[in-house]
Each structure stands twice: as C-alpha cells, then as structure tokens.
Image (cartoon, rainbow, N blue to C red; front, side, top):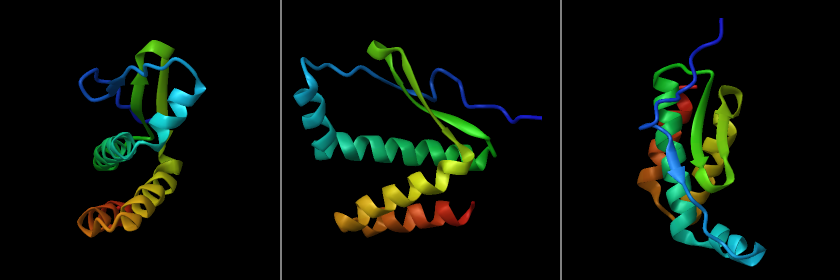
Amino acid sequence: MEKETKKKGSDITNLELIYQDKDDLLKLSKSEDFVEFILLDSLDTIKRAINEDLDKVELFNILNLSLIIELEKKNYKVVLDRILQHFVEIEDYDTCIEVQQITNKL
C-alpha cells in the first residue's frame, strides 16, 4: 500500500517564474535570495514529510509552467545533503545543525 503524498493546497508552495529569456532564468538560479528561499522551503517540506512518513512530497507548483516538483522519499537524503552543503558554504551553522538532525531521522 502506497503512503499518501502531501497534496493539500496550503502545503505546497506555488511559484510563478517571470522571465523573458534563458538569461533571466540563469540570473534567478544564481540569486542568493531565490536559492535560499527554495532550499529553506524544501527543508521545511521534507521535515514535514519525514514526520508524516510520506513516500513522496510535492515541493513546488510552478503555476505558469503547469509543473509540480515532487520528491520521492528515496531522494530526501540527497536533497538534504545539498541543502547542508549550501549552508556550510555560507557558514549558517544553526541551519546546518537543523539539517543534520532531520537527516538523522531517515
């Protein structure tokens, strides 16, 4: 039996990416504010998914592209490792501790 996927409208983060060309998307992907927003939101969602023992979770709904980003449980650790790497690089050790605690629950 497959476990429930988090689908509640209030739980998924809705995004609309406004861009004119590929360069705009590249700039956005390198924006520290955007990257941090994506990583922290992903961290919160993965934390809830672990606590609720979900097999997969919906991270983002990109409205203008009709795209939903899902993450399967088997990939939680990979994403948590990437989040940890980012916060080590910017020396945010409080968040690093939180990420490590969440990873240890897997």
